Length: 179
Image 1: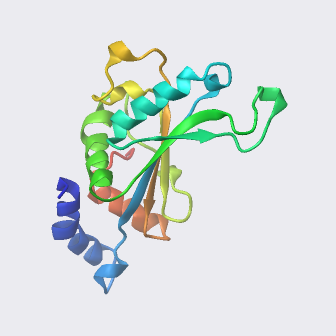
Image 2: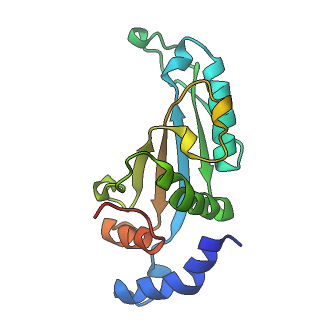
C-alpha cells in the first residue's frame, strides 16, 4: 500500500472528520483521481513531439499515457481533425497516491523560485488544477534525453463538492500552498 494512502486511512480521516465537523467517515473528502495532461502545440508541424511526450508522461506517471487527438479542424492553427496533439494519463489507486507523494516531496521543491501553489486554483467543485512549466523537475526524466522543455497540467479530483473541504484534504497531505 502506498505511504500516503496508509496515512490517509489511519490518521487523516480522523483529523479531517473532527476539524470539518463531519459525522460519518464516508463524508470525509478523499482523492478520486489525478489527471496529467500535456498539450503539444509543436505537434502540428512535427509528430515526433507527441511520441516523446507520451514516453516522458509514461515515465513520470508510472503508467502508459495515451495520445490525444484534435476534436475538430482549426485552419488558423493548421490543425486537422484526428491529428495527434498531446498526451494524457489518469491515475487512480496506489499509483495516484505514489505520484502525489513524489510530486509533493520531490518534484515541486525542485521548481525554480518555488513559493507555493495558489489557493485560488480550485474550480468550485472541490477539484484542484495547476500547471508545471518544465517536465524536467521530475527525477524520472533524464535531462540529457530531453529535446524540448514543455509543461504539463495536473488536475486533482476529490470526492468533495466544497473547495474548503478539498483544501483541508490537500493541506493534510502537506500540499505546498502559498502562505
